[in-house]
Image (cartoon, rainbow, N blue to C red; front, side, top):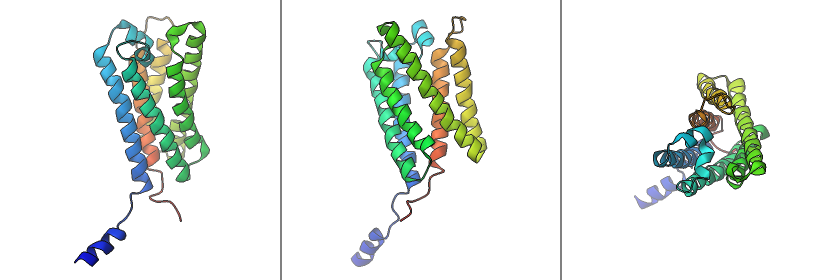
Length: 203
C-alpha cells in the first residue's frame, strides 16, 4: 500500500554517527594509501626508500598523485574531527585530528629538497604530526584497553621505531617502509575510535 510505504520511509532509521565516521575514515584512508601505492609502483628506488613518503611529494612523476593523497587524507581527517566532536570525544582526539590534517598540508608546502630551512621545517612538522598521532592511539589503548587498540598502537610504535632508526646515517634505509607501517597503525586506531562514538546524537 502506498501510504504504508510512505510511513515506512519516514520512520526508517537514519545513518548512525558511527557509520558516518567509519565511512569517512575508510574513504579518506583508501585515497591516501591508494595514492601512495600508486607512487611506489611508479617509483621505488633507493632515494624513495631512504627519504620516505615525502620523496613522492617532490619527485616530478609522483608529485600530483602524492598531493591528491595528502589532501584527501587532510580533508577526511578534518571532517572526521567534526563528527568526533559532535559525538562527545574529548578535544585531545578531535582537535588532534585537525592538527594532523594541517600537518599533512604543511608537509606539502615545505618540500625537504628546497634547502636547509624547508628541510628542517619539514622534519619538525613531520615529528609534531607523528607525536600527535601517537598520542591519539595511546589514548585509545589506555582508556579502552582492547586487544584491537593494543594491536594498532603496537603496529604504529613499530613503524615509529623503525623510522627513528632510519633517520640517522646508520645505513638502515627503511624510512619508506616504516612510515607506511606507522600510518597503517594509525589508520587502525582511527577506525577503533569510530566504534567509541554513540550510535546517534543525543537530542
